[in-house]
Length: 69
Image (cartoon, rainbow, N blue to C red; front, top):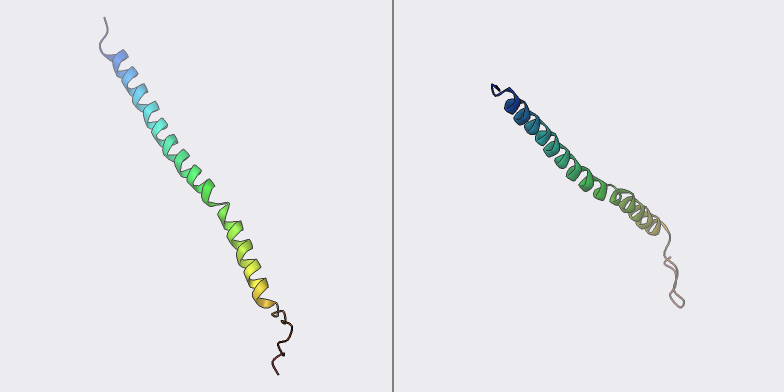
């Protein structure tokens, strides 16, 4: 009655969707990792800008300490 065509089709279908699921899982993990790293970039840039601005400001003079000549 059946010559194995149904079984072959079912197995190929299962293998194909399994492959797609594996690729989607790997892509999902990569995107989650990338999404957790990307917000750190603006935070680090803001911290570096704040550090550069603080270094560019002249030091506040302390009372009782003469200014260098």
